[in-house]
Length: 176
Image (cartoon, rainbow, N blue to C red; front, side, top):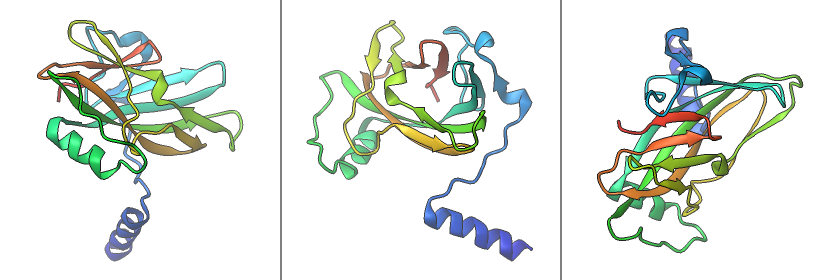
């Protein structure tokens, strides 16, 4: 049994399949409990219900890459983009966001999580749009049920502790 589990995990890693991470109810936050002053932390999930499309999903910020590590990652994934340095006094930040679709009306419905739905907000309240600077960043389109990750890239002031804002209502803490 142990050998089968190890082989399954290795196969999933080799083909790029994400192993579903457990969602604990004590780590779940709902939109009405999330504010700019009390954002979703790294070890918490945000539960989101889109009543218009009747889609329920959860998301969390899985990791953050900043500064020279972010530049290295961007340069390795440039493809057809020309690299531009961030403005003086700023650095690139990449937030890896994990999303899992939980419920939908139609089992083959597509759910699109767009980088355009996210903004970085500096500690001074300056809003920064996502920047498409490499092939890492793209919209995440899932066929339900499904899960995946998206990489959000933006420039922030050096040594700032920004928040990530999703659809003008869900705040995520990026100060890990």
